[in-house]
Amino acid sequence: MKLLTDSILQHVPLRDADIKRIPGYFESVRTRRRQFLLREGDVCRYEFFVLKGCCRQYEKDATGKENVLQFSVEGWWITDLDSMLSGQPSLFNIDVLEGGEVLRITRQQLEQLFNDIPAVERYYRIISQRGYIALQRRILSLQKPAIERYRGFVSRYPFLETRLPQHQVAAYLGITPESLSRLRRKIAKEPL
Amino acid sequence: MKLLTDSILQHVPLRDADIKRIPGYFESVRTRRRQFLLREGDVCRYEFFVLKGCCRQYEKDATGKENVLQFSVEGWWITDLDSMLSGQPSLFNIDVLEGGEVLRITRQQLEQLFNDIPAVERYYRIISQRGYIALQRRILSLQKPAIERYRGFVSRYPFLETRLPQHQVAAYLGITPESLSRLRRKIAKEPL
DNA sequence: CCAAAACAATAACAAATGGTAAGAAATCTA
DNA sequence: TAGATTTCTTACCATTTGTTATTGTTTTGG
Image (tube, each protein chain N blue to C red):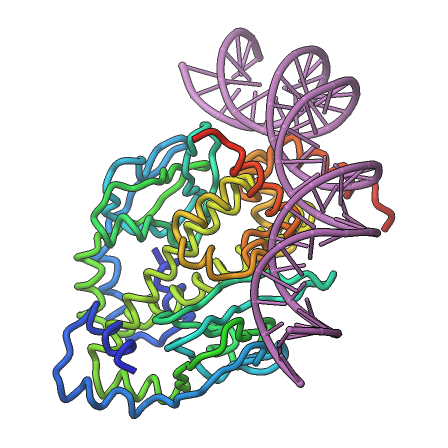
């Protein structure tokens, strides 16, 4: 739980009294591999903050291929903002790759928290903007050849590259696992 | 200028007195084809709102290829948020494809406007969230084959597809103009 | 209106990526 | 630990996309 308040304190100052109040707005959930936090077709009711483990948000397209929108490990948020805000059924699944623990909070509780501790709203705005910028970077990356996308992923998220199964990385990069395997071999053969 | 206040009024209510005050925060700029609103290496100081014409935000990668992040036509915003917030030199160019007129506003003026008319801050938050969701959709689209990306683009932005040169559309989809031409032919040959 | 520039289509060939299948290696789990 | 599952690699071939070059058309700007 300290992970959450630390994340907030990295961006905005908080009084000790407020730090102590924050956990009360969240609900803790233990997670295990393959568990769903959100299923396609359901309305997304929570924002999740990962305390331990690893989750992914993905869509299953018409051909059954899974396209990964986001991974989330310790200290990261994950939700389907579209469904959350619109109240429409989600197009995404959020599931657990590595069990652990997440915190969850409803929109109503989050708004209550914003009202009670305005600094948290500021924190939320800041991480939202950072998220927006990260999505832009990813779009530019996806316009480049697969080998560059992979190199970019490894250099930006070295801790994910080693932690995730490679076919999950492939689904994030928008290529097949076989292609990723080939790219890795090619890179391994390169002179230093 | 009514285009701006109409855009705001679509998302939040405003008193007549406030509607009248809003233009004062912006500066109007006439634009002509090929003009730069932001050059790579410069710090981005403005957010732009397009009143007439068409702009694009793009990066020039190491090989000289132009990757388009965004188009912006009447009623749309465009800026480099990253450079704007960080004060770092921008990696992007924003230039004019079709001359016309834009409004521009600095961060400071925008924040002043938020303070003076809180409903505008709410409007800004709403369109930011919509922008975030649109970027997510685009990421998923970029994980699919080029022909699907193109079909998706045409069905989502029919007014852009007819208005833009095809090589600009190609740069947005992450393919070469030649590939786009092939895809168009393929689609034209399809049975109805 | 005219000359120059930009744009679009096409072809032939090259390179990258996907699909399928098979098997090896690693990891879970009972 | 043993069996089952998942993960990873590799090979072969098909498809998609990129590259280069050529041609003709359209648009731009003086």
